[in-house]
Amino acid sequence: MRATFWQGAGTTGYHTRGWIPPSLSSPSLSDSATGSGTHVYPPFPFVPSFTRTDTVIASHPLRPTKPAPGEVMYRKWCPGVEPAGAMLEFAHFDLGSSADEETAHFSAFHKWHNYPRVIKGWNEQGSKEHHRRYLEGLNSNPNVIPMIMSWDGEVMGYVEFVWIKENHTAPYVPGGARDYDRGIHVLVGENKFRGFARTQAWHRAVFHYCFLADSRTDRVISEPKLDNSAMLKVDLDSAVHFEMIFDFPYKRSVLTSQPRERFFRLDML
Image 1 (spheres, rainbow, N blue to C red):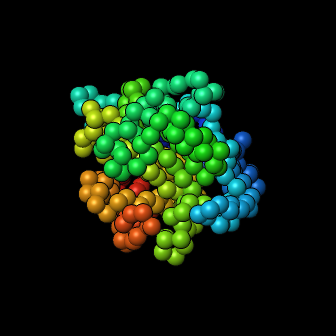
Image 2: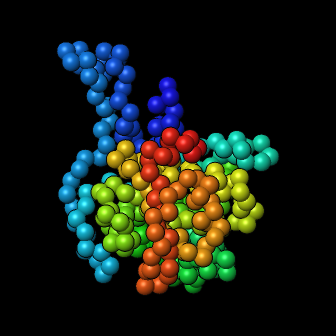
Image 3: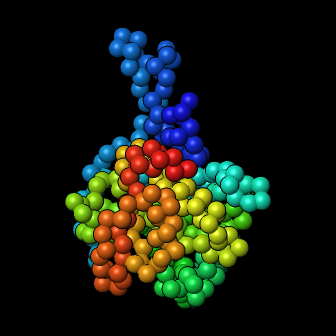
């Protein structure tokens, strides 16, 4: 029961490849001769692949096909959010089927990225055409899954889940990036959804999603700006490890990591 709760909570829809072995007491799912259970839905198989771009040259596992636009990837009830709890959801970004279609996800993304507060962290301000090109690039990139976060169905933020080994952060990771390391880039767009309780809830849920999405992900890596004191405080509250301070060509950052074992051992839900 405990294993099912911690390692399976939040999975929905797209994630049919659960990784918890079935009960050994189930005769239909265990080998009667050896007494060993098997995975009903094994993880996505390891297939060698390779990426070469202007910023990355890396060998890595082939990544799974992306979910359908708008598909809910994670759902969690957060009782600590006032006034009486709220439902947190992550949905795969829905860009629409054509440039003439403006979805709720795209409208929110465009609005948020032209807020001065968001520009300071992301520097992706611009026209709708600029933002559509940016998102089309992400959709064609198997390394990134962009998602919209919402509270009780109302969009509130944006997150990019990346595979670190194919990301420009990989060369800075001490000891090198591992095959299933994940990375995150997050923003909260709506001011009314800022505040400690909500931030703590979605921040820990982001890590939780990464660990649920693939059982081979042992850590989640991020690189917030060194002067982003608010984000660093949230990281500390979630028991994130600060590896080092380093310099990208465009910013000075803190390399952080959240190990799977620490996350579950310290009950970071």
